Image (tube, rainbow, N blue to C red; front, top):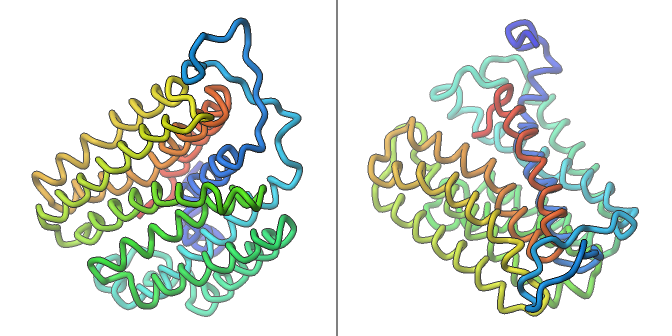
Length: 320
């Protein structure tokens, strides 16, 4: 694909605004929420092991996949896409100085066109969620509102910005769980895991243009530590299989920790951008770890398949 030719096309500029690589990570959120809801039934090939938490090879039953799952995948596409387009709209003045190559500052995309796109995507997201459950609709509306508050108000706040962004991603997990509405109440607290993870990424990203502070890097690492501990602590639940999740947790750690540690030591823009990009794409690994714990290695592998797709798209489209 000749990106030089594509970059001059107006439709390509609007596609860039949507950050397709990031949207794929949002699909993984829906899949993990689906696993958390308990709607996925599993089978065990061969003989199971003696201890309930040592069942690493649970395979998902395709018949148990809900028929309305595609609506939630469309919903998160609209909500996430609308949120990142709105992000570029709100940052247009700053990007003119700091990132003039972006679609709006370069005038490859217009402000009015981007506003129509963002509004349309939010509408599609909410309408798609409305095809699932009433609770799904409410959660979708809350995500859209949270995205608006983040972009218009909270983004540049040191504390509320990261927490607000984390709330959007935690809501995305709950959107998947809403396939079984009563499970949102029972397991809604698990949304704190992606909330803290995205808060860590958002906190460290605040210095990606001019550089950051070592203290921010230390806070991000502390948040990552809580995330890892929280995932491992899920083993205390009777229906979470730690042995199934562990390979994904280790892969997640190997991929995420090195760039975050390097950034904490030397918070220069290049290291920060690398850490943010790796952190965003690696959300799929976090999702795969939790999903496999609830629905088996086979289901976790399905979620993991989204990672190469996201990484390939990240070669064509900006992630941060």
